[in-house]
Image 1 (cartoon, rainbow, N blue to C red):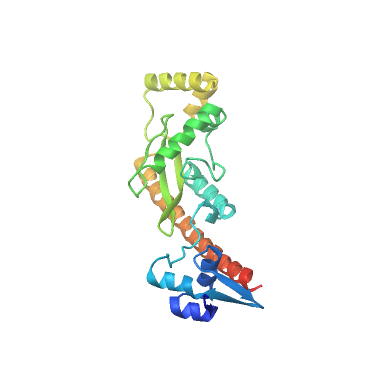
Image 2 (cartoon, rainbow, N blue to C red):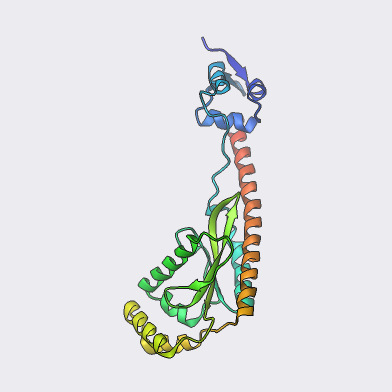
Length: 249
């Protein structure tokens, strides 16, 4: 007949806290019975853990986009985009927007107003996720505008990116631009005259301004990382409390 241990005895034997004991009970690594208001744990299961036959360490809540405080991030992103005079959006790792696009130019609004154009924008954002360099690197999107991203990591895991762009670094060559706009208008079923007028209003930024944007982009992303890490820590603490409450009630 299997003998049983108290929660305190299991804590001491495994050198873990009470939350971990209850979490292992919940996921099946420990077996126990409740006697009155207290749990008793199978000695056999504890011996399995001590022998290495079963995993001991319980992971924290997996980090995901849920830790992002989007209601706080949106106004910060809005201010950043307005000051930098660019468009900005935060997306997940699939290029899907998590926030509303801040300070979008009319040219990009026309593209995003088309279902196929919007999908192309999402694919461009997803390509930024795949960039290996840590620092922002401006490149051309599918429509010929400049954009870059800063990584948003929590506990070392990439969960989102902050994208900034919607500008040119020099005036487009006339014939090349005309052909590009014709192709875009036809592909995404957008009125060519509207698209041409909107393109003529896209900002052209000098190298100094672009360099400033890169620095601001990283600093805003780092702010998002910090508040997201704090939120993730709070969520883990609340999860631990819920585990204890569930088994002690």
